[in-house]
Image (cartoon, rainbow, N blue to C red; front, side, top):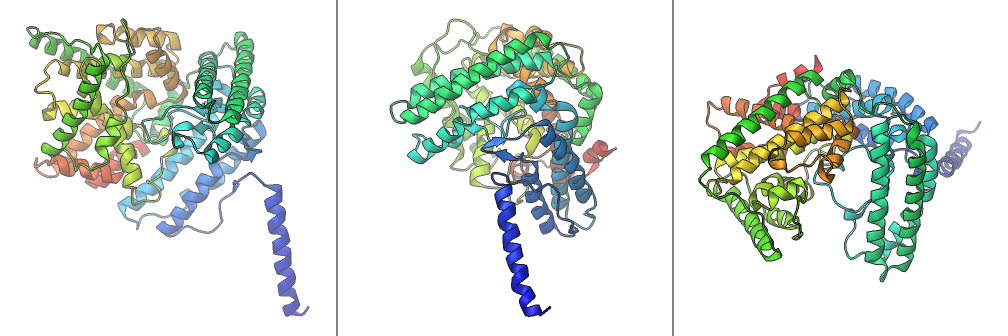
Length: 556
């Protein structure tokens, strides 16, 4: 055949094939299998990362993600090819930073593997199908397994534009099809996940009603779509209630699975049993420290809660000013213009209440500056927007909450670190609140561990956490702990990440200072920690110290 004729024929066939593939795979961005090309450079790894992220997204059918048994079985089957290609990469000549990015992809792949083998949220957890989130998360990605394509209201500007309102309207109207699919997909027998997941769906219905009231004047079509989704949500919750009596199984993942998840997904060098030991130690330390501080301060007046809006606004705004000045004046870290507004935007409003408001409000209403330290979360999120990490892989949130030990661990560490650095010297009784915060986090983390160890039900874990939280600030039937223990049940390892992550950061400080013969400069440490990014502490440790031992314990 004449080669000059062959060329246009091949091109025409290519165009026909291109349009055929586009038409048959509309609404989907999945690449089922990785390219067979060998990865020999870091740039190629970055390209592979973007392909991997596209693969893990479920196929979208008319705007609804496909979590059917067939689709999930196929994704799990294809996952092995992605893992094989990643494991074939030789990173021995790469820099530490580049090798760390390889491990981030490795951990994410293990996260998807764990989701398929163990968690199976699409078939076990009704809360997975929440389609509307009205409030922001304080960490890089929303906590727990969440359905792809859900509507995150904080991602939209307010007031809404016509274009944004139209987009939300369209996505709300996909909810009925979503819940029709969910009724087929949900075949699991995890009772605690089922009951609390039903509650989450009903809470969504209330959030939708609140949203409808908020936008009904400006966007009547969006109001109609919102109420339609609310009705679909209610009908789904009713269906879940009807199924509930048949759900009798356990919801925890078991000790062996939990330990695998710690090491292979969160890159922590512990087992379930070792985390229990560490958490018990921190719970005892927090109670002992609190009682000694109470004794030390016995002649001082006790902390009183703010009792009016004017006092609340004054104290909260003053606390942000004081905290930011402390960071600057005491050379804790390099402060930036975006940090103050990031904290001030989360002050909230005074809420009248004669009883228990909720655990963290009980802390914040007694002394405003204590929770500003934990709100370092909001500074971190602002930094991700204003100063993106130089690594293409680290500038986006890690999936499967792999960041939890670093994000929650540092926010928790900031409470005690800032107290030890002198922040509360003029607020002696506020130091007691630091120990109460630690006690609550240790107690609720243990509750989550006991659930996954199949030693407690969710209700029993709430009672345990309430029992070991001082001052009666955490009622066992209150919204704070019942939602937290549900969340920790949904996402193994998250409940302990606050305390365990803080302990890992303590190790990092110790080695970082030892290498400098004790010449520890806090500002240099914090700035470098922030530059590394919100990734597992074992990887941060490796990059900041050159010591891979923490990660090597994970890989044993």
